[in-house]
Image (cartoon, rainbow, N blue to C red; front, side, top):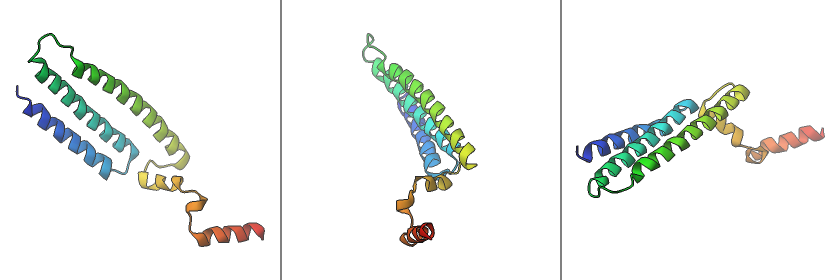
Length: 124
């Protein structure tokens, strides 16, 4: 089998995952898109390992070893990511990423008039 077939499939998978990360608003779907991108990288690692392994028969399959490390990292990432999403959903009631951006803004990021109004209300 030629190297082109898994490379094209990997590029399509990665492009689909990238579109999912950029276009989705749900945090769960963004995590799934990141997993799709990692799987595209894994496919490339294994394909290039097989392709380069044909030249030298007595080689260590480093592409497959890196794929195992990537799978382990992806499992940890999805576990922590899902825990964070569930905690945010319990506190906020939504997993919409656009609505979660408001949590990053502190009182210094608010409009100056709103801060001044809060100070006058606190003193009154």
